[in-house]
Image 1 (tube, protein in one colour):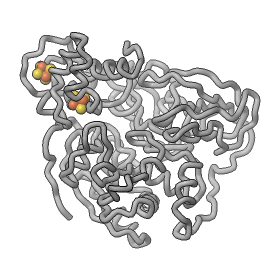
Image 2 (cartoon, protein in one colour; image 1 turned 180 degrees about the horizontal axis):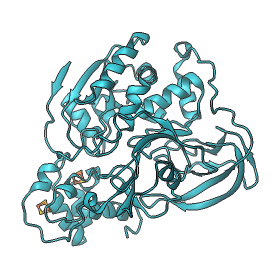
Image 3 (cartoon, helix red, strand yellow; image 1 turned 180 degrees about the vertical axis):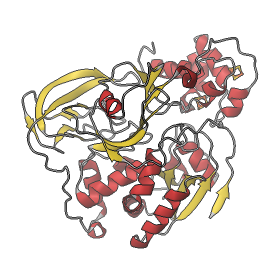
Image 4 (cartoon, helix red, strand yellow; image 1 turned 30 degrees about the horizontal axis):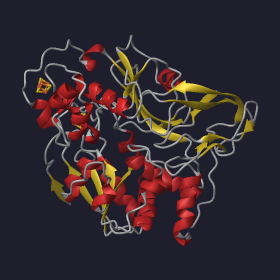
Length: 441
Ligand code: SF4
Ligand code: SF4
């Protein structure tokens, strides 16, 4: 086992996982109404293949992928399609969603299909199963997993990295998944290794996750996979793809590039498990692990929730708020989005639902930049956030792009560390939306 130091950039953010990282996963209640967005992936919206009044079975496709970066979307519950309506998703995406009222029998709940002997499957069959069941990168890019497994012909995969670093505060769903579903995670990793044929497989975890490492070691007896565990220092944003690839291999993903450009592939823990479920059990991606936490929550937990469950349902199931939260965030506190609508549905990419107090939000008035340079030191991709902020403020977007605006991963480290509480990330996020043709307001 090797121990590596974090090379540069990043911040020491408070961990705040104590409430949830030792608590077992449990199943959230099945929602009576499920709101299933047709955009839960990186590319074009899925195209609805059901209409108002249709009866849908649990796990049936309700939205078909409509392009290379698009993915199938499935009904998380059996029922009747009440309507297909426009909804706002956290982060500003507006898309159609299939609203299903529960009715009829469950085909998948509590039943386990006979496991398939996937080792006998050829590459196309495996990729087809992953695509058919709607598996996407649930922890980052939201690219369909078959696309994520496509390595450039001239650059075969040298290192496949299982990303067990969940460096955002509060979030511990991946940690619990590794502890409780180690065998499933390893099989998913093995399936992806079969697709990309890496020279080396690395499992990267933060140093405190000894229980996860033990669970993975125990599970490996039933796996043919050879891998190396690398334990990393706790540092945010260690789980970011660029950061992880740099830490493990010393290679820099080029500006605008992907890990595959430097012979690497990273695979999230939740995604690995979804690959296993899809290929071995034929399970569509209709649920995910969500961390529900924050000082304004009555109780914190990691729950397995059906996609489409309104966040208000899981908050209620965890005892509701213990006061008025200063804000409710979907995702992590650094990269997540504030929401005001508790009917906002859980999607394939929802890692957390956080109800934060005023003390946790650390809201304070913005003051002038004191040129302390902390944001520059914190930036894991070597940008100069204060300079970008000024360029954007003065309307010089072309120069901001020249100086790396599009390389910003919106990790939030610069905004967190800034003593003047300058909304650096928000300004950069809006500028990027403007560049994509949105209003950025
Ligand atoms: S949000 Fe962007 S600019 Fe700020 S630290 Fe992260 S990558 Fe750098
Ligand atoms: S951290 Fe804040 S105050 Fe310091 S240089 Fe950056 S923007 Fe200015």
